[in-house]
Image (cartoon, each protein chain N blue to C red):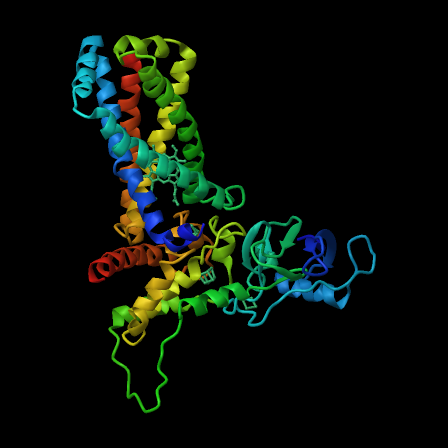
Length: 249
Length: 206
Ligand code: HEM
Ligand code: SF4
Ligand code: SF4
Ligand code: FES
């Protein structure tokens, strides 16, 4: 293993500043990940040319690939920095870039709030609040529970958004992750009470039909959420629902 | 633009449907008819004449081919513009197919515009009957044979791969295994249609 880890980082001072590349050489230690390398830079913010610079800004929280905060583009591919182990990467220059589909706040830190806005739009929750005790909820078949659990592992990291060709500045597409959540909450016996509202939302502008079936989302998803199965299933649900709606007018 | 936004679901569904019915069905009919040219000029001219005798042919062509094709094409070009392709970064098989669906959309568009003008619209206005001899004049030139062959490949790919995405867009193939099977069926269809189409081109060039 080389003595230094050579990094090339795409940096940006603020939301409307222009980006620039800066290189770093961090002394190698075994078992490092991209987050711990960035922490080393923070301790001693000197670039590869030996000049003093500002410490690199990034986001992270759980450090075990369950929160999604540290998502960035590493060697051209979107993934989490905390689970990007240096020892498992080809020993070359490691490039770090912020996500390209979300506004950059500074350096590698981006604003992913659009993901949460979209989750709100599709009512990605179950209404259980009432003015009186609603009693225990209905039982869920084990098969359903497993399927819902699969989808509930989504950590809103944005990898699927980053890889989806139909989610970009030109399109108003809602994106893959919230679509899977629609299916998850529509399948829940209590959540199903808001099923029609969710289907109506994803049948609007930028809804499910704006998916072009590139199926990049499932490839890019670190949690392997069954996104493409969920999208196909919702295509069936919305088609049948729209026909029913027309005849029920 | 407000109309497009409000009726987005319906418009997208119609775009998907028109790709298969009637345009896809027409493509199948067209390629099969042309393949009769392999049986010689008489066989081909006989087929073509049978079509010429359909009553209200022009109206059928306008309502069932020209209008749906124009609708599918105009929206399709807009959908090509909406995508931000990233095959160089994410080299997944389906991503290449997604990209090729858009490339073949443009190639098919250019080819169909040229082909429909020379072999149907312009020809009809010039008062020339469609016949083996008319097509043979064009296709016996190597350059035009190649142009037709590229147009064929693009249209057939666009249709075959479109069938795969159609099955997802309408919620027919849902699970990964069903989608994989559909993938195989569409690949075989692509090969068969290319063979039928090439047979027609060879027949008309001879
Ligand atoms: C002439 C210009 C054409 C253009 C610009 C065009 C464009 C497109 C585009 C962009 C798509 C993908 C839509 C999406 O996934 O969101 C598409 C799908 C499709 N096209 Fe075309 N197309 C053209 C001609 C044709 C022709 C001639 C056929 C039939 C032979 C055809 C059949 C289909 C089918 C079956 C689909 C799949 C629909 C789906 O995914 O649900 N297209 N077209
Ligand atoms: S299937 Fe393709 S277009 Fe649809 S959400 Fe996934 S990546 Fe985007
Ligand atoms: S579906 Fe996967 S890639 Fe998309 S936000 Fe959720 S965990 Fe991330
Ligand atoms: S810090 Fe939570 S996923 Fe990396």
